Image 1 (cartoon, rainbow, N blue to C red):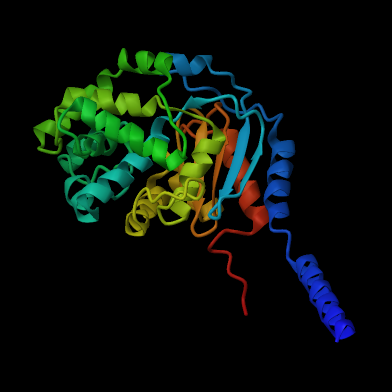
Image 2 (image 1 turned 180 degrees about the horizontal axis):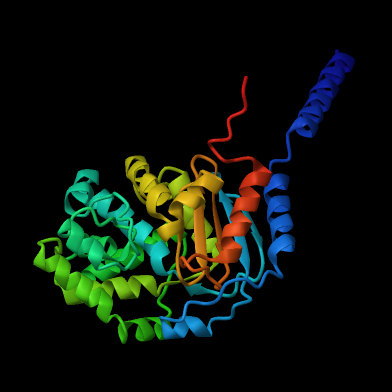
Length: 336
């Protein structure tokens, strides 16, 4: 009987080991794809830092960080993640998510709009042409309107709500890059004009000056690639942060955020981005770029030099390369 039991236990152990050996190393493709892209593009010198915000011109152009966070919480990185940049327009995604969570998807459709404007991200003409309608929450007019819709009895409460939302998406307490905020706040007359024009058309839902200031603070939140990737992965995971395991927004909210990212996430080159990757993405003039692979992972790259459209040159090339190596473009359908 003892011999029989020992034989059974031995077979179980051997079977278990065999199963372990047969488990695919799902970690390897992510890290190797990151490593390959980093090696390929680390010496690329194309593009230049944004300089219309004076402080951004002073950011180290050699910062290069890559991070992937999977929906089950695994983290893969490359580069010096100690370096942080201001989040800029990537913040628009997470404020939009909070507005949808608080007020519903129909409210965004009715009060802001979701169609791409077809004009520059800070266009005043787009507001005039549509009389404040269909201005999109991922360009400046729609983003300022979205800030004005955030719950809060006053400016301080609205800002606290926005900062807390971004921190929950990142699974980390985030803070403002003070020099960037001061630089932007001293030179945001165009955004103030946008807010007042929206008010004239009845498309601002809080004080325009205070809304513009909150928006300016939002854009100055400091992040690294890992934090951005966790934020993207939370969207990929239906609103549940894969690191903190906290539900930040609902799956239904993510369902409405991702299409807006797909159609308007990279300014005038949003169509080219979707054509190359098939993934919803969002860029910021601080040099950050995120992409969401729904149900799989979030990816983020930081590299400050931008192309003429305002998107990081190196970040775009990096994510396109990784998406191709991992074969995760959802439109890449293998015939059966």
